[in-house]
Image (spheres, one colour):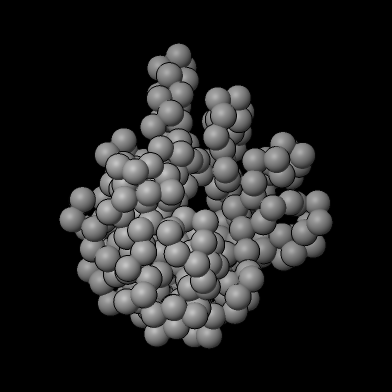
Length: 249
């Protein structure tokens, strides 16, 4: 049975990586929730996609140059819709607490955002935070930066790790090495990549979770393939399409 992961929460219907989008993902029954983590100036783990706050808040600047107090002053919802003007950028601690409160039983996919900025010790801080919590759900780490995944394995050996890739053709050698590396549980390619390399995907021995699967055609395509999960901005729609397919079987 294919799993549905909500990309940055229900990103297509709510402001991404906020409590609003996370709550919606849980409400509609997503099997997993994908979020992104950066590190602030005062070494706090911040849940936001971009390296800057420019696109998704009313502020400007790099996360690495801002304190948590400064980040919390920002409006992270109005850019999406005025009714979300009170939304704030969450920390990883706040988000983990929220998911426990919501009785989430799925998988939290934590993307370590070190592909552009190499946050010093982010892997250590992140693993320490996750391991210190009494979580009622599973979690896994993913990143475009394979070195980050290797580093976090040193601190959190039992957690699943998955490598994010845009293409497959240009990384075939690295992906082949991944097949034999026990530190890695899965691969997260984009939907175009799996269409280009169908045979490779069918024979890949580890879990594959595909991003970002947003239209009905791509959803149906992915549901017909040997994949562990699809990652989508529209989890409610994906769940309805998957359920419709399963009822016909």
